[in-house]
Amino acid sequence: MDPAARRLTLPASVESVALFRDFVRSGATEAEVPAEELEKLDLVLEEVLMNIARYAYVPQNGQAEVAFAPDGPGKLYVEISDWGNAFNPLEVEPPDFSRGLAERPIGGLGVFLVRSLVGSIAYRREGDRNILSFNFPGSGE
Amino acid sequence: MNIEPTELEKAVLLKVSGRMDAENAHEFEQACEQWITRGTKHLIADLEGLQYVSSMGLRSFLSVAQRLQSDSGSLILCHLNGLPRHVFELTRLIGLFPVFDSAQQALATL
Image (tube, rainbow over all chains, first blue to last red; front, side):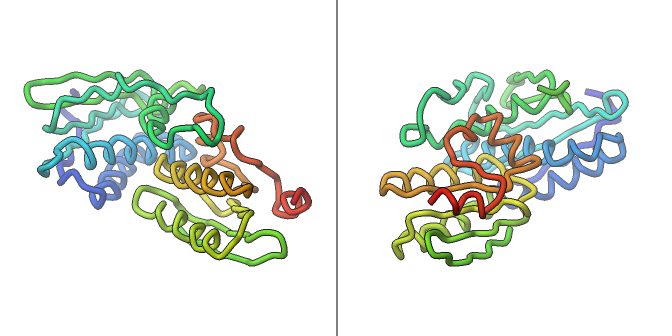
């Protein structure tokens, strides 16, 4: 990652999501990410960080780290890490869209939204660390 | 997030504004549950002031709609715009809810 990257490490908890969001937002604004993309970025961060907060360290607690660097005009490269159970969110099956209201499962939408809203996305396990990296914004639909 | 209910003849209108996220989505679900427990069949969620909804919010919408449908009721959405509309479209939930431009149009179908 770019040595000029900015990093923030906080407890992996619901309460940290807003702090991470404000941290990345400040960088996104400096990098001139278009204003209409900022709430999508909030959404991506919330989905990834909530998954970490709820599942990565069960039953213990741990930390999450968000790092980002500018990636060309109006773009960011973002890495989100945790030191919890090995988990590749990109292996999560997409929701079953063929089901009607009564049968539609209530979960599984978060990872799908993340994949829909970012550019290229990758997962790697380095030692005891899960790292999800992506470019933002994506190229559109 | 702010939720402002209005009791109408055939439905309860809930004006939802602000941001619906992991921290507060359960508040929407609880507000709906209260009306359902009191016998309300149709809830109309006016989302004109809603700027943001994450997957936890989608879960709440889905859960309330499933509960109402199982009792021959419905959760109707109106003024679904901006990021919330985009998110409903991406997850293809939009086809599972009655969606109208305005609460008046929604009421006319009940």
